[in-house]
Length: 179
Image (cartoon, rainbow, N blue to C red; front, side):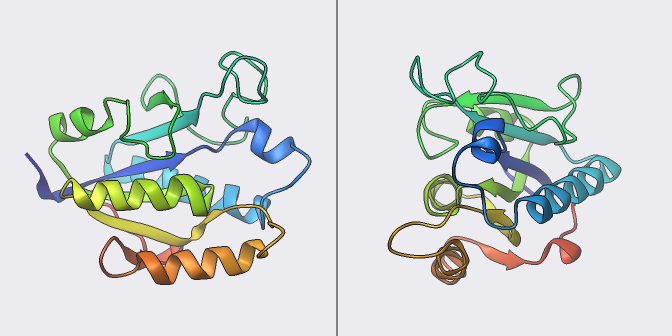
């Protein structure tokens, strides 16, 4: 059961391969700083922290156990306190126990941050809203890489506008609070 007064932080795919690959995320350092600010704020409020890792197929840059699969070493998650889990679909809910964990903790509001905007951020925000969570998308704490069709800044702007309203409430990192 969802308690609208309880929130959690969900960090998506902040992995080595996405930072050290050939294409760098837009404003990568700023993204890492903002996500770490939200980790500290969630921890201070006693809000649970969940960190998803994309687990790709054997031989891929994010194959389980590979260097690229690991969370970024400067990401301030604590494996002793925070729940780190693997997924192999864009939505953090598909094929994982995330919904069970959130329900067990009576979470009603989910603050979403991380990568990549047009895939995992988008899919997870939509799925969370469909499952009845109030989604807060930290509008300046998710990122992606440039594509041949659009640069990363345009992708982020587009998804912020598309997700705002029916799927998420947009909030700047500095204004995110945990219940």
